Length: 432
Image (cartoon, rainbow, N blue to C red; front, top):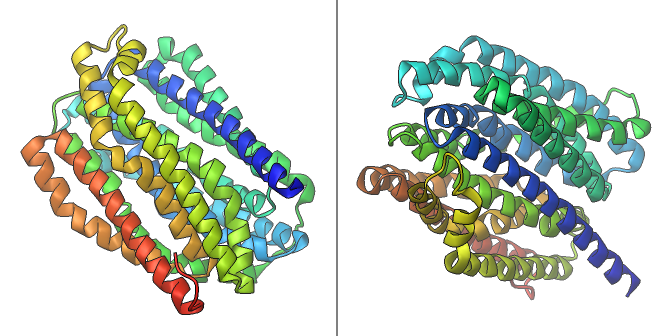
């Protein structure tokens, strides 16, 4: 009973903290959009963000997923030493990547934004260089987040995210009236730096400064199969931005905002319902207790389904007046609000698909299998390529949003069937 109450309090604390982060992120998006409007400047900003988002999705997030089970299986001392080694390696790697990309930003802007004017591409290149300054913080922060989650210090992770979001918002309020869209670009870099710094402060007293080459080998052995497949799968970010630059000015900003609003809600569910059970699932998989493993997966999936279903109904019934009340001010017109609402409805598959897919993928990672989720993601993205391109040229930005939603749902269905088959193979009397 005490353990149940403790878990419930943890979930409630994480929900409150993540809801706070969600609100702050939402406030930052609102401030940018209402002050600058949905136009060429915001399109350039959100197009520039695609590069750090791509690298986060390809390297940083898979790194967290790989390292949490690895650290969870180690003792306190082992995880402290391994994380020290990996922080050094990752910081050097991400700094090198940032330096190379810094040199080729004008070429990247032309490649990723063919529909932009010359002025918009030049602005995008400047904003991209601002974003690249935050890459090392993103990489090191991924390692630190993994070691804290593995040690069940979820509240510290959420607190660091909240402080980072507060810092970004303060940066926006102080400097957006002075520096314009460049201040918005710097706010994302400030957030990554502050969040990483908070995690570093919490981790530093426990660090063990011992070089652990086996930690590098173990991480690469698990991460390597993910990189190629995830690079292909996550290129959806690049495809979405590229197609969006061909749409009328402001369309990219509205699609990005719709994706971010759904993504922020999904992040809240991931932090509150998915992250806390990943170390537990890793331990259960290591012990071979598949019935308990199955039970955790089913309960969390049901919870995700209930919450996202209610959110979808709320969006349908009250989304338009709510968005009009919040965004229909200053430089955002009513027609733009209607477009935003429509895009959010078309992206509804992301509401459940993101947290449910994250849970199911982490179930495989807990088993030490990084290949199956990657293959499924690659197949789902391949199937969506034709839908996205065809949908965009048929229905414009709305067709692109609908195709993205279908992609999320197909991936979740395939992961669920694959996990069910895997557990039945390991334990013949257990089924999801």
